[in-house]
Length: 191
Image (cartoon, helix red, strand yellow):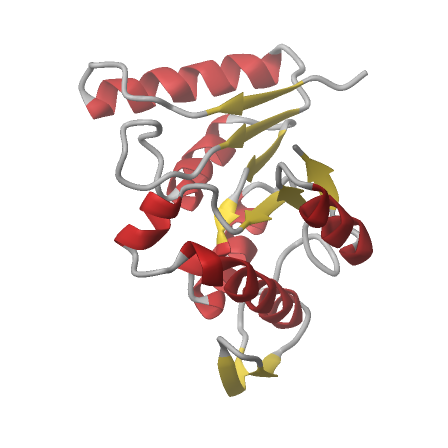
């Protein structure tokens, strides 16, 4: 049996530097204790999590751990440029020596999406287009993509993930439409 950890890194009323130092010590201890993975939530603006940029946090975690797998659960794809996320995923996979799992989703909070001028009703279509573009970019030296939300032509891709063709993808959703879509794409699914 494999046991993993899911962390919100919530506001604990302590200085942020102290909170992060404590969490890094915790991650190191969890790695040494044999936990399989550590996944971290991404939320924006509410104090539900103090890690709105999971890649920065996971880069630090990658440097204090040696065995456990790491990943965001989930990157909120409607809030990202696929080009920027291709670079981030490639960097994190290499910094972690191939221990990255990539959780993707559209976001459950219409309020958080709205802060970024993304309508919740549009987020599924943006998410699917972003996911297709992301997968394409992680496997190519040059990205040409023409979708409803993202369009790129002959963009050089210099960074590549260590895991081939790319790290495992996870999809977080609480509905059957999402789980069906994840299965059709070959993604791991978590509810």
